[in-house]
Image (cartoon, rainbow, N blue to C red; front, top):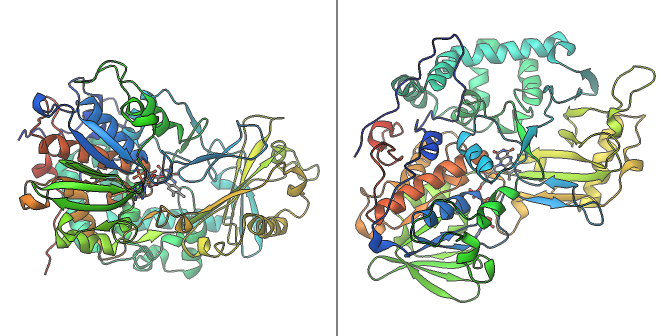
Length: 565
Ligand SMILES: Cc1cc2nc3c(=O)[nH]c(=O)nc-3n(C[C@H](O)[C@H](O)[C@H](O)COP(=O)(O)OP(=O)(O)OC[C@H]3O[C@@H](n4cnc5c(N)ncnc54)[C@H](O)[C@@H]3O)c2cc1C
């Protein structure tokens, strides 16, 4: 094993290095690994052309398959629904195809540097996403308890909102060593990150987000906690996370995952679709011009996996919805892990019992969205009386919670995300059809904007999703509850299989469900790269000594272990 832990990045010019999703749990530089000219590793020539099952054609599965193909393996991708998974971009029936809606991920922080590697690789453009109070957002309306405030910056909101923002900063500083961790992450100072984080994991694994606020002197006011829950930090609406582990929230704020968001022009689903078709310039074993698409019959993934079991020689045998049965030396599983308990018949020998427990304990956030196409960005019209935008990005405690205004310039058709909700707020929409949802949303927004006739601008039918109700998904994304750290650690570290009994190796978990930062595509990419390293190692491969992989540095970077008894 190589032992080159990245050293702290010096900064002498007074400029801070950028923040990236580098830890805090496993501070490995996935971005440097991807950028290195030596590539991700090699497998012995005798293994070239070996088939590896990749279950799930979302971002994680497609990244894993793409990198395994480059190493000379033959990924066989199974996908139950469509390539892209939770990167799902849809159009509106009968409307200009350039009008699209992001049903899953829609905004990406610049700190997602491994994700950015692939966005750049396939030549996609990004642009600022119109979040509440963001620079790219002309105006924001905060509507709480029937009181409406119009703001272009935080300074336009009443003093209490600034007090709440200050309380959050104080609470993070006093309870979670915020500035020290932020600096350590920027400088990639691994010992410092580990020292701060180990202490916090021990102290806070049992704590909810809400309990963390309540414990802070800065948040002794209920009113402050209530406002914070609605407006919070970054994108707002974080009260739906109040029951989750505070560790989940700290990961987001330390790494600025909820800040400076950018959207992908034309839609995020293009990323996995372009990777599927991409012919890498550097490829081992396969002829130049090979792509994932060209390696699959009819250019399409195989259908849903229905059964997974171990067979002689410690092989992984996969049955799919067409009845086809194939056996592999290795498999990567990227679908939501509850699928292994429900839609896929599995034998218990696939994973150690501790991993099954962790899979069973996985906790998901629900999420619903609804979008409508409109004739033009009418919200930029000015109210003759006040001189303000007639409608704004809106955060409210009404049913809609978050309304986003998405346009591509004046006089062109545009899109409104009338509502984006999580957890209980999402479940409230579940029994309603798309049109029923839209009616309730228009009524809510009508209370906030009594003089704006949104309906007269709508040019097509709404599109909607509730991820908890999608046949191939179990919710929007995982969110760990208090006490879940140990389960999360078991799932994330599953790619380190040398320590498992030989008859429990060969299948690798990856994807959002086992990521430390679920709900962020960066984690889907990082866990895919762990699985790629795991498969490479399993086939007897190695990385270049100048570019050690996540498994090579594991012992120095391993996530803190909490006692099991
Ligand atoms: C509402 C919502 C908002 C989000 N917002 C953001 C955001 O703003 N920014 C951000 O960075 N991230 C966001 N995310 C998270 C991001 O979308 C995910 O991290 C990422 O897309 C997950 O990729 P994955 O490959 O791990 O999983 P998935 O995309 O879920 O891929 C798994 C695939 O497995 C398939 N599958 C299921 N069962 C089977 C089976 N039996 N056989 C074969 N295939 C199967 C599924 O159809 C799916 O395509 C959001 C997600 C949601 C749902």
